[in-house]
Amino acid sequence: MAENLRVAVIGAGRMGADHIQRLHTRIHGAEVAAVIDIDLDRANAAIADIPGARAYATAAEAYSVDPSSGGVNAVLIATPGFLHEVALLEALERDIPILCEKPLTPDAASAWKIVEAEQKLGHQRIQVGFMRRFDQGYMDLGGLVRSGELGELLMLHCRHRNPDTPAGFTNEMLINDSVVHEFDAIRYLTGEEITSVQVRLGKATSKAPNGQHDPQHVLIETASGVLVDVEIFVNAQFGYQVATEAAFEDGIVTIGGDGGPYIRRAGRWGGAVTPGFEARFGAAYDVEVQSWVDAALRGEIGGPSAWDGYATAACCEAGVEAQKSGEKVAVMLNEKPALYSAGEAKGQGK
Image (cartoon, rainbow, N blue to C red; front, side, top):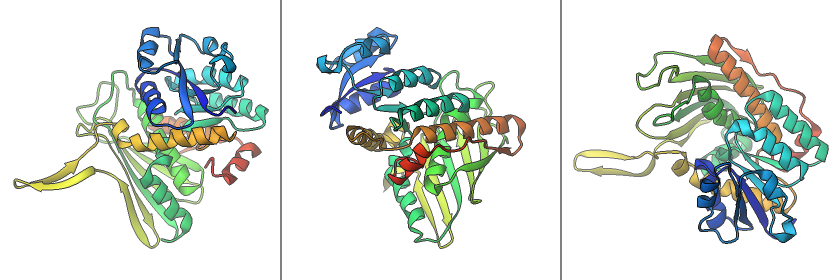
């Protein structure tokens, strides 16, 4: 691997633009060499302050430039999920480091195709962008679980609240775009696979758009019987809030929630709630991308693997089915390949 990663960022929208600036201003060992977006004006705008970076309409154009002549040798995928499969397969063909924003792909079948394609390389190249694993609160809670200091973990209570949703945010997206993070966080914290999902639909907010039932209550069980409940409320109005409370045999631990100073003034009291995910998890994204770069320069991955992406896709499929039926739905997983079990020993995956 070269001294620096020369990264092609695929997608210059909200998440892609954020990563472009992150790579350019805060990450060591990597540089933005190319931005790929079908909207070339948007791609060019994203690299306006990055000398030497080039804009392309397709990944094939960027890959056609030899790395020794200014081409790319790593890729960060930040397009909508339905475009990930093609982008991942193209990058795997070139055997270069990949950081893919969640989801790996939108469904378990296509995610398994990615797992199979990576296995053919004989080593891991894909890190999936589940940034909560790099948030200090989640890392501290994960450490407490693994240490056994508070006894066995028994239950998790999760809250995931957004102020509102963009146009076109469907009922299924509450699971596929929001609860997907809880699925991965649960797997990370417990070190276990999720075995079942149930979704309960109660009283809905009038703030939800037509066709969307919000909030929802998601009930989850892991292989050892850890019970988890998730409140997913994507039109909560007041801000962006993600929090988890863990019940152990010998204590209760709470992470997340409100941020900033708690102020008492003029007969009132209170603090701040972050307006969006960029503010709430900005530091976690920085740690995540730096971990990917550092690991890629060693020929490894530095976070969630393609298996983790596949497993969460299977959880989402069960969640959407449960959302429609109201029944408890089993999560169906293929047998875990040895390639990813070996990665766990290095702390790369679940």
